[in-house]
Image 1 (cartoon, rainbow, N blue to C red):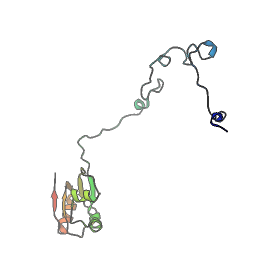
Image 2: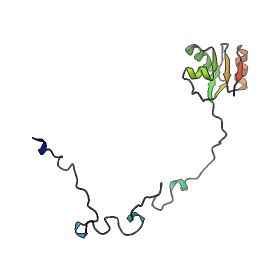
Image 3: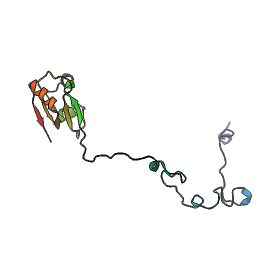
Image 4: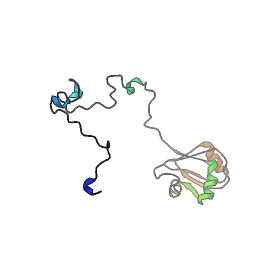
Length: 149
C-alpha cells in the first residue's frame, strides 16, 4: 500500500448536495427550501425560542414573585462550629480576614454569626452581623463581638 492508494472507508464520505444547479439535478428551482416565506429567503434567522408560531414556553408559563435588589446575602457561621474552626485552623479571632486567609470565605463575603450550638472558647469576633442569641452566648463565654460595616 502506498500513499496514493489511501482512501476513506466505503460509505464513510458523502458527496455534497449541489443545490440550485438546474432542474436536471433534482435540486434546482427552490433548492429544497419549499415555496415562499421567510425560510426560503436569504438571510433568514428565526427568533430565539421561536416555536413555529405556537405560543412560546416563556409566555405559557406564569410568572411569580420578584427578586429583591436590596437583599443582603451573608455567609452564615453557627457558634456550634466555632470551636472546631479554632482548633483546626488555630484562629485567635474570627474576622473576615482570618477566614479569608484560611480559604473559608471569599474576600467580598459578608459574615453573620448565628446562635445554633454552644461555644466553649473565649474568642473575639469582627463580623458584619450577629444574631442576639449568638451575641449573648459569645459574651457568656468571655468573648467580644465587634460589628464591622
